[in-house]
Amino acid sequence: MRLASGIRLFSSISKPFRRIETARQLAQRMTALPNTYDGSVSIAVIGGTGLRELPGFTQVASLSVSTPWGEPSSPISILHHHCKHNDKTVAIAFLSRHGLHHQLAPHEVPARANIAALRSIGVRSIIAFSAVGSLQEAIKPRDFVVPDQIIDRTKGFRPWTFFDGGMVAHVPFGDPFDEGIAKVVRKCGHSLEGDGVVLHDEGTVVCIEGPQFSTRAESKMYRSWGGSIINMSVLPEAKLAREAEIAYQMICMSTDYDCWHESTASVTVEMVMGNMKANADNARRFVTAVLDTLATDEYSDLVQAKHLAGSIKFGVSTPQPHWSPEAQKKLGWLFPGYF
Ligand SMILES: CSC[C@H]1O[C@H](OP(=O)(O)O)[C@H](O)[C@@H]1O
Ligand SMILES: Nc1ncnc2[nH]cnc12
Image (cartoon, rainbow, N blue to C red; front, top):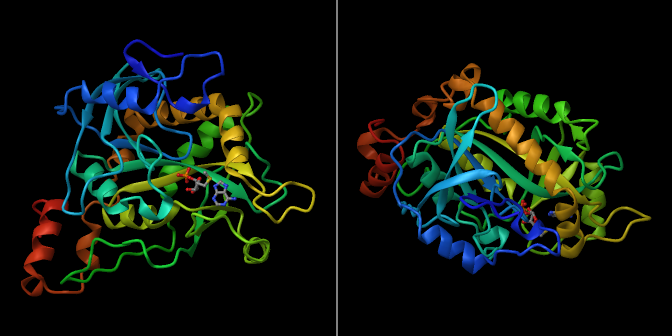
């Protein structure tokens, strides 16, 4: 259903008889909205494959943010969400990882611009959504996984840090996701169990370079390494969020068994999109439950990532008087008033 003032998530997931809004119509609708927003926005959702919008949320602005690292993948939608727990309206930011037309390959996603743009509008916590392959029999297509670890198989082509070009800093990444947000996500996912949602509480996501899927030998090797699921998107997004002091958790939805499974056909885009469509309603209910819970006062400090605020100052190796002018300028933009 196309809501009058609202927007739809999983736009390409509508039933065949429904009138589907094209990417161009979506872009036109976004252009017609205000490009400014005065309220505060602490939480963002990054939508991945098959997740272009959030349905049932009222879109009130579409922000075109320019950063020292370029333009983000898409305008940032500001959505109003009525929280069912406390009767308050909260603002959520939404960004489409691969662009409004899914025109950006995983290695082309401007992750630094995306994270910097979100931080610049006040975002301090991100729920990132990803369509993933399963590397384990027990994780069936359409199951959800809340990953807690990552294995990096990207090839070093993607810019992966804010701290370069004349200054050096190092952040801890032993636990690449935010455990506080993960707890909320798990609780919400389990509350929907029996109602169609199957949730795995942990898992190691292997992030490959893509855009090609893996070979069978690679897929089997990732299984032998202890990989649970596989995608092309969690990095450098998660690393950059950590550098930007943003609490980041990915929610993964399994869409295929990659190519290791003896009795199942190897992954294709059709398979990925088919399972995303089939499970769209569960994904929507899951994300909504998470946002409803995070919007309550109980999670206010978590959502504002108070536990991460200021942490980057301890990771800086280059004394500030020795930073290049370019680094001063860029990091001054990302962390106003910090240095
Ligand atoms: C279309 S299959 C491969 C594609 O799907 C996943 O996208 P996302 O993580 O943005 O949902 C995967 O990472 C690949 O980019
Ligand atoms: N098998 C797979 N490999 C990498 N990314 C994926 N996204 C969905 N399925 C995938």
